[in-house]
Length: 304
Image (tube, rainbow, N blue to C red):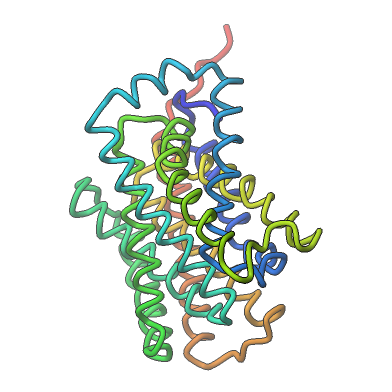
């Protein structure tokens, strides 16, 4: 993925593709449902790193890597972002494996509101009148859903906060999407290796290698991590953070539908109300975003 500037339309396509992958993640996680969450996250980290390094080599980003690794400020920021995303990964996998699909979905429904608050506080971004109305409607829907899930609200709030901070850090750090993810993986790799070494010495050993499909799922964790995160970081650097935040409603909606259709969770009135309110809000927000984007695009000069 290139770190060069891209158009808003291209960034929007990347963001939508990212959420399609993230929304379908619970189905993929069925392959690793018997793998302890911490072990899966450790393998996920280790299999992400070689993929990122291969892209760095293929795209000739060695000099950018060197500059990033030599900058103390950039490394501190990436240490913080790596910590935030590791916590987010673990809690998300744990929630899916333990049957808290709606808690995970709610966390990513709350996430857009967290991201837009961060954009207002730290990036001084503002919403149009139509966008503000869409956000208010979505907030009402999320509030209705949260009232019906108070016992697992801590899971949802932690998911929203950690990924909101991760996105803000990745938007402002002086490192491109690919380089940033590569360094984050390098930071987490020693901890992953230490945990796997400790787990291998325990009675049950490691899940890796005990079943063909399960092992395939573990290895695929690298691709399922690297590809959408690079797409997300690329889109985040090209779009206003408020827009990135609002698009976050898409993946939890897919997760919400999977909870009903694949995982067999019961649909409650509050959840239906949230679903309807958020999708009306998404339609309004997207319409206004496309309308203002067309106005902002410079006219194409006529061919002589």
